[in-house]
Image 1 (cartoon, rainbow, N blue to C red):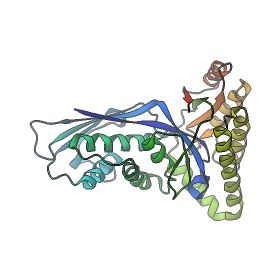
Image 2: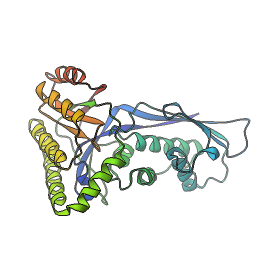
Image 3: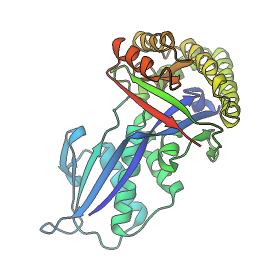
Image 4: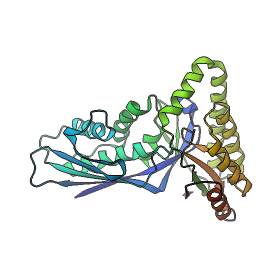
Length: 312
């Protein structure tokens, strides 16, 4: 048996504007992850693959799955990539603790874990960059015009400053800080929010380009703040980013409720994270406010909270 995993991720700054060439910052979230187990099937024909993914209600042979199924797509892409001369029959068991459509990189993490498990089991490992590229191919099919930040952070498992079309920059964390993730419980597929913003951008390009510029400037400033360890200055930047995201119409009543609850309980900054229109928000806390903020988020309707440390 071969096992492989990939962590979730959270975007700190730069949602949506990253699709249009501005920078964004994202970090791994070690508390949630996707894991894939690969074992040989002894009594099946050569090259047959059986997939079990309870969280996705999948239990099927690969050749019986629809061609547009993301699991089938990443498996087929991987097999073509490694061009294995002999492939035994295999069983893939896929488990993920990453909430789906919540801005935590669930799709990218599952794809990367599948690539790693298959390649390791067959004995043809791929470089991290190529793992990321394969995951991005599936992201493109299902999200339209993804930025590439999910597959990048999930694959490299490092805090990253990301600009579309450029190599991700792993940067120094000057001091540790704590983020609380609050889940609205509202499923929000990335493709819907991305498509909404693109349509609005086409109708009023000048306005949206100006907002994207401002979001990019906040992300760049946030990188410097994080590198210098000036965590006390990070909260106001998160609040600025949230206001700009509201301006492009990707917040929601549920997100606003949780963001306001977090700020009211002592978070120094709070904003949505990911595509918006639901999904997750994040709040910057310290040791004195973490419990208060988590309690306030749950009281305000969060279906779950995750506390994650961003460390040097």
